[in-house]
Length: 265
Ligand SMILES: NC(=O)c1ccc[n+]([C@@H]2O[C@H](COP(=O)([O-])OP(=O)(O)OC[C@H]3O[C@@H](n4cnc5c(N)ncnc54)[C@H](O)[C@@H]3O)[C@@H](O)[C@H]2O)c1
Image (cartoon, rainbow, N blue to C red; front, side, top):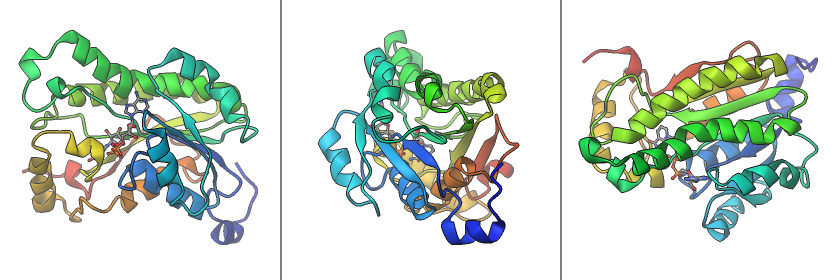
């Protein structure tokens, strides 16, 4: 635990002095973009990773308060993962936190094809969306010698949703993966937690056929209400989990969904 006083935190920000890796920025609606923004406002030094369209990610990164370096990372590419720690260390001398904001499933795995999706397409979804939490965490372990926080983004996998299909199964895998990682990384003082967010209009959401059905459920049932265009609540929760303010919490899923998970029909 840090010995910085509460008053100092208020002045400096809860991520002051923290070095954070943020994956998953694609557009300025990406949840990761808003985590990056709030993290910088709270004093963090960032390194971003981008997948595929790197020039787009670099352009979006320039909209942050302090444009951070952007490294290429396909989280399913063994060579990218192997070189990741040394590429990060060209910019920061270690990491205190990592945001996993990565999800992908082929179109055949979404939108009502559940019974006919091939194993190859399911495997792609699992690799990019669930196993990748382990791949990313172990790739940066050499940089986390002083412990730290790994945070991933979840969509409630305790029930079956319309159209979410194999992405839902991948999220169930992600939830379990986070618990096993929490078990195995605890002795290194690394916490692993997920933020289970309600639906937000991002590129990933647009690729899910029938996504608008979720939107109606949330607006009608969430006790606190829910805005599909406001990523701030999910971003703040990620930043809180990346900070020192959850020092004894790991293997946890924090729901940031307006309370929908807590109520029946
Ligand atoms: N939008 C929602 O409604 C919602 C709700 C709950 C959880 N989530 C989760 O939040 C996370 C971020 O998604 P988002 O909604 O901000 O959408 P997004 O499209 O902005 O982000 C998804 C990111 O995953 C990256 N990605 C895909 N395959 C990759 C790979 N092989 N290697 C590295 N990166 C890869 C994309 O480049 C993109 O940056 C995902 O895990 C998503 O499932 C989203």
